[in-house]
Image (cartoon, rainbow, N blue to C red):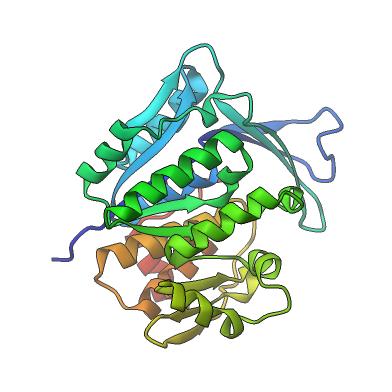
Length: 319
C-alpha cells in the first residue's frame, strides 16, 4: 500500500464572494454568491488532503461565522487545524471577485486588516510541524505581499529546511508589488530553498524574462531544485526534473466557469503525489493537470477541488 505523504502549508485563509454578473468591476450594486472558503494556501492544502496526503496548516481566521466556513471545509477533508488561530475581535479575511468578458478578474481584498495575517511562526509552531513529520512545506507567493506573513513564512521555511523538510514554492507573483525590491528578494530566496518550484507562465516571465524553461531550469537544478513545473493554463504544463526528464502535458478542454484556484489545485495535487512517492514524475504531472482542469468547472475557489478517484475517473474518460 502506498505511503501517504505529509504536507504542510502556511498562509492566508479567506472567504470569497463571487459576483453573479460580468463587467461590473464592483462599481455597481449586484448579487454576490458566497461565502466560499478560499485563500491560495487554503485551496492548496484542501486539495493536497483530498488527493491523499496527511496535511497540516498554519494560518488564522476570525472567531466568526466566516472562520467557521473555512475550518469546517478543511477539517471535513482531514486537514489538521491545530495550528490555525482563531483571533477574537478581528474579522476573517475576505475577497470579492468580479469577472469580465475578456477573462480578466477584479478583486477587492480584506487581508491586511484581517485575522489572515496573524498566524504564529514561533518555536512552538516549528516544533509542532516537525513533530507532524512533514515531507514538504508549501508556500504560495500570494501571502508574500503582506510584510508580517512574508517574515513569518520565510522564518518557518528556513527553520524547517534546516531540519530536513523539503520546500515547495508557487511564486504566484503579484504585479502590483513588482517595484518592491524586498519582495523579489524574498521570492528568489524561496526559489533557492525549493525542492519543487511551480511557476505559472506569468511568474516565469517576471523572474526569467525572455527565457524558456529549458534556459533557466539548469541553474535551478544547480541550486537543488528537483522539479520545475511550469503551469501554462489553457496550454497545459511543462516540467523538468533534476534527473533530466522533460515533459509537456496538453490542456484538457472543459467549460471554464471559474478559473480561481486552478493553479493551487495543480500544485496541491503535484506536491501530494510527489510526497507520497507512488507515482512517476509524468503521472504526477498528468494528475495535477487534470485537477487544474476540474477546478475551473465549478464556481467558487475550492468548489472544484477533487479527490484522487475523481481525478482518475476524469483521466479515464479523456484518454
